[in-house]
Length: 95
Length: 492
Image (cartoon, rainbow over all chains, first blue to last red; front, side):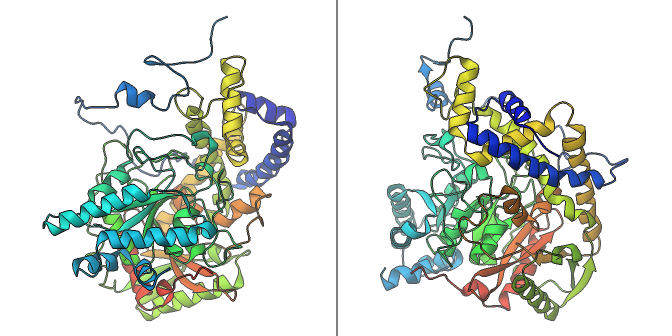
């Protein structure tokens, strides 16, 4: 099964991932061959099999709702590419 | 390097603890010896992305001073350790092998890092990995390719290749790694050391940079099984910050290590000896089974019929989870931001396009493709169903067997560049390790010989969930009878 360059472009857009032209070409051949390989799963009979998303049989793990110290503003913003006061700076969202 | 240095750096953690207890060397001398070894060897081996000389020496000196005052010290007091660079270390750059996190300095320690501090271990530095732990050779690191200490033309395996090579090259006696599809066991096998992936939920993932959250697990590298048990004692146990980290009791894994398990049954899956397995690897693994037989093991042939589908299942489950996990790298909160952008969406796309390497991009694309409308049933949900069948295979097998034994990797270490242009052939090098992560069970690779080119071979033992104690005892039973764990790579 082949995945076209247009499909890759669309998925890359959905993934917010800019690809260089050579990356786009390579991704299309490599992903096609990986998808061909993965397609062997279709031969497995999975009628009446429940999906297994997680190996552990745990759900709804709760803890006491107690106040604890967490990162302060300076620690939380220390790695921000663009810090503006106590906020993250981003390009304008509205024109 | 001086004789004293090489004498100390070839020791195990347990031996270094004894040496300090007897007063033959203190933590500072030991730490200096490993730092000297790193200076001498790492320009060739390239295990480390960052060496923390000053803080390592300061920690060592403070341990010596506390020891001299008779204070109670942690169980790894004065033992140097290397940490994979996807495990957060407060105030110390954690790059994940990616340009995306080149300047990322975590504001907190991972749970396991806290545990190492509490145990008074001496963190030497951060080790190289495939970018975001995606790869089997370290060739996907944005910074360097680590070399195999047994042959510098070969890869060390991956993704925890830096942590494996650091121990194999005697640059650190023990190290931490992470294993999502074999990333501890495969490099341990290729580097001739012991590597343990604990049960999913045995060790907290808090502070481990997420790749595929339902598969990721932190684990250990060491020269022998005793050190594995020592280090697992330190890192295992409940942590409220990881809701998948269970409250199951943590036994003292060293307590019964020398007591052989008798009688015990070893399952040998015929699927693990099928086509693609190197003949020399097979020979060594079969000989290892004979050794275990001579120590009282009953060998039982079993079948894991769905293991042929493990890699396909893994590359759907792991990439789907990765595409979600890596959505956090948006150029806003931390990590790389492109300087050249016209609006917010463009800033996201360019930051991610510039910050991620090609394997990471490939996996994000594959993940989002398989989750996208029209494909999710045929790919992602299908994979989750096959995942259950893989888990059922193991459950059935462990009803009759204490462990399942086989090769860790289908071949010995391959040459740098040999598989880097063909992702699928690289993926296939994880064929025996990957189903363990899908099932969430523990697995260990222990050295079981060398091929005709003096490259190490690993024996993999898999156990039922939370059976680490038994797994380690059986591994130790084998190790005691064989010389492989005593060999040390000589870097020329």
